[in-house]
Image (tube, rainbow, N blue to C red; front, side, top):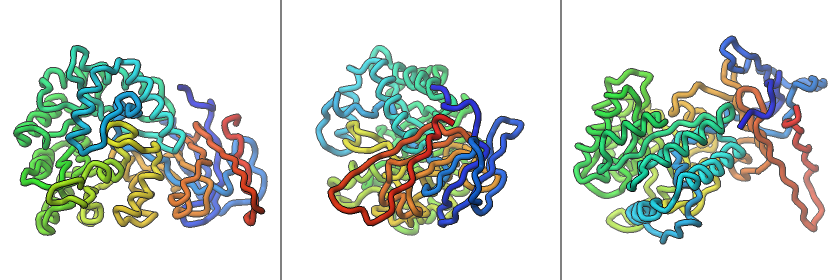
Length: 426
């Protein structure tokens, strides 16, 4: 999927999250990366055809999705799974996935990724299963193909999702086939610490990072997160080490939680909160029935842990809904995780980018010129209304535009909005 314009724009006029209307001058470096060179109060004069006027739009860094399952995305209609908890969802997926061919994985993943891009997500890390049948790597191949299709408009990272029955040689085959990171869910194994050790042994042997599903439960006495932090503490500083879910942290005693938060910070383990799926799957029964399973964002951040947030599943056995929209995640962070709107926006933009090992983006000097522009007045309006009117910019080039029309049988009080500029033809 090629970019929609051969050249980046020279600059952008838009509104910052603090309400300031500004001009952003961008420049292309010797490395080909377009970055913000200047941020100045907006001027009124016409700036020429290579200047993008987005007055009426709030500009943020483009969003990133740090934890997706594009191989599973949009499979609910095909599999028709029952409602249930994590165990039920795993059973439904393992039973149903054997009937999905490589083209199904490619088609659904591309559709979900395209929806993400349209909504402002320009980088995604997807976990992809090694399947339990005669062609276990077909989902990995399909996602590697989708990554190639999206080259230039979306950064796609693939974490192989192994289970405790997956032979180590097959995990390595997945890395050879296109996966970038070792992943898995050691807490689901009969011996969680042995499985954790096995997966990290593979990552170290191959010199790659790890992104593991960690302690995705609310009740129990087996934790893998401490052993994970201890094992990766001496890894090279630029090697990714990420813990997804971490639901059990939400039900730990305060002293234990504080100790683990300090360990994670020292080991540079990033944590990904996943409110949508954990709200759906967790807290259905057991001693912590009614608890909602979102990890402890504030305690972790206060300890110096890099925390990001993602959507996880999109209309599959693990979550029947989901819009592939970072503003849906941000809204749930506000209402269910008690985050401020500004913190919620940060968790799905530059914090999510950092968890993926990507440089900062957005309307600040020196940042990469990757933007999400949403027709709104401020950050609260952006998250609360989640308007579909959006412009998405990657490396200074507009790559997606959405605009809506509406009509009601009452007199409009507010002024008519300014039409979305035809950035796709620039």
